[in-house]
Length: 296
Ligand code: R2B
Ligand code: URA
Image 1 (cartoon, rainbow, N blue to C red):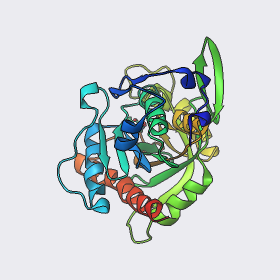
Image 2 (cartoon, helix red, strand yellow):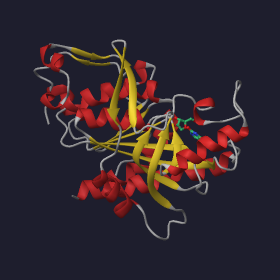
Image 3 (cartoon, rainbow, N blue to C red):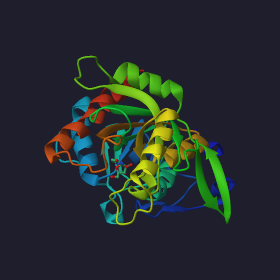
Image 4 (tube, rainbow, N blue to C red):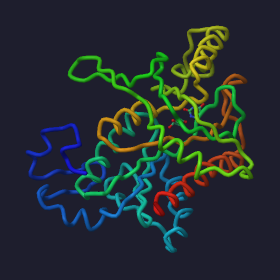
């Protein structure tokens, strides 16, 4: 893996690079031995919304590497994202939505290149709304659809609408289902299409936001149309995440647990205890998948 696989010819002309939001200084892009020493062994980058959940994940993964103790946030000084390294895994918080996630994703993609990591896999561990599925179901994303119900990531670049493919690699999905799930887990895990929106409320067809200019019937028609496209979960990052990782030439997957069935309502009203139990489910799946990757 080298910078030639990153689709940015400018990078090879930069002598230094400051990963601003991580507060990591690459002082000499031609000699990154310090970065390689710190991060070169990384095989998996797990990203999820909150710092607390990523800290919990780091603790959950510690036994794989025989590590104990309190995980240290390596990027606390950046005051933006939390980054915990546990053995060959990085657990990173990404905030809510594609805009916050894309900032740290660009920097992480460069970091794994500077560190010369070998075939790193990026996995988003998250929550989502379900579409016609039981709350608690774990969804591994296939094709990612935007809020127009198009299977692309649309982004304005230099004043133009740019559309990029937004799908996750099938071989990783197959491996996650094969090695991450067990029939006695007590929850369902499926692979399906995902809708990603920039807005939790109107963008996802909710009628409980501060503003709403459509009827219940409009909303249900939209959700049913999404269902017809094979979409079984709704969240806020998959289109950007799948397209950017694909363009950068790294493998990626999204494993999310549904907190609600949107065909039955809008409010996420499960108890905090139940939410915590649901959030554990992607941990269980990704831990087994990571073990499989490390044994390959
Ligand atoms: C799922 O949950 C968050 C919104 O509550 C968002 O990050 C997402 O994709
Ligand atoms: N996250 C979302 O983006 N939507 C939901 O409905 C629940 C979690």
